[in-house]
Image (cartoon, rainbow, N blue to C red; front, side, top):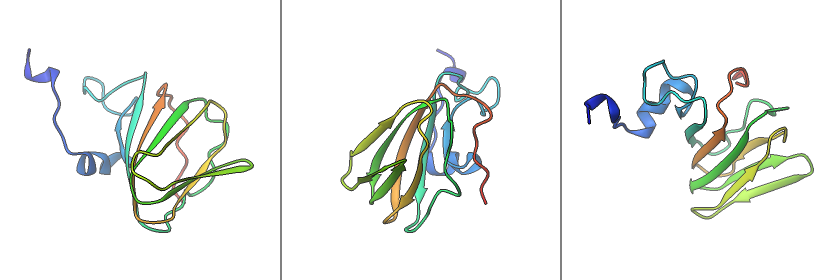
Length: 123
């Protein structure tokens, strides 16, 4: 095994340069964290943090797991509150969504596949 086959990091500082995303198509070619199959995010959200706007028509399946805090996922006609460590929600392709941190929260999000062009601008 060569040293280029293993990457060791820390989620918070590594994620800071890509709005929390640790792994996905947006990492440089040749980086072990570059992937067209999956994206992984370490989300750190202060209390009251809200998505800039709803995500619409996203063509990925997603899983969000609560590490700490209290976090609300919003879907058309339904909100899901994650309140205990390990609570999670999965939603399918094309499901519009948004979110709100009811308390300071840490989440892990996994999306697949990793598709360019679905970033929501921060406004």
